[in-house]
Image (cartoon, rainbow, N blue to C red; front, side, top):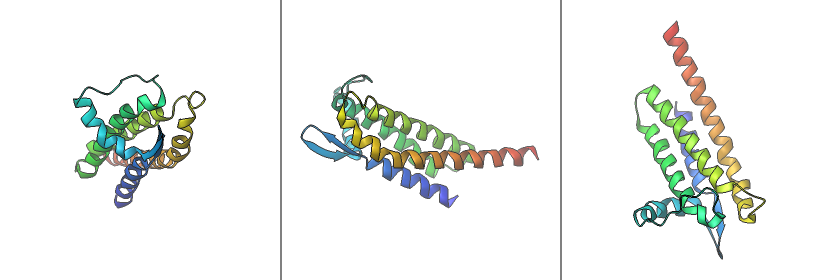
Length: 145
C-alpha cells in the first residue's frame, strides 16, 4: 500500500519534470501545467492534436494537469475500488498527455528530448498499473472466496 503511494508520487514528479525546449528557451512540463488553467480561462488554448509542437504545449499542460489532479485524488480516497479507478484513469490521461507531447517526432525535432525523458514516467506508469491491477485481482479473489 505504502509502496504504491510512493510510486504514484514518483510518477507525478517524474512526469512534471519532463524537459521541454520551446522557442529560444527551455523549461519543464510543470510550468505548462501551472500556466494552462489560466490560459483556458483566457481562451488561449488551441485544441488541435495535429498542431505544431509549440502550439500543443498548453494542451499538453492542461491534460497533464488534469491527470495529476486525478492521481493526487487517488492518494486521498479511502474506498479501494474508487482509488483504483482514479489511479487507472489518471495514468491513462497521463499517457494521453505524453502522446500529445511526443507525437510526430519526424516532423518536429523538438519532440526528441521529451521522448527520451518521458520514458522514465512511462515505465513508472506501467509499474503503477501493474500493481493496481494485481491489487484489484486480489480483491476479486477475496470476494469470490
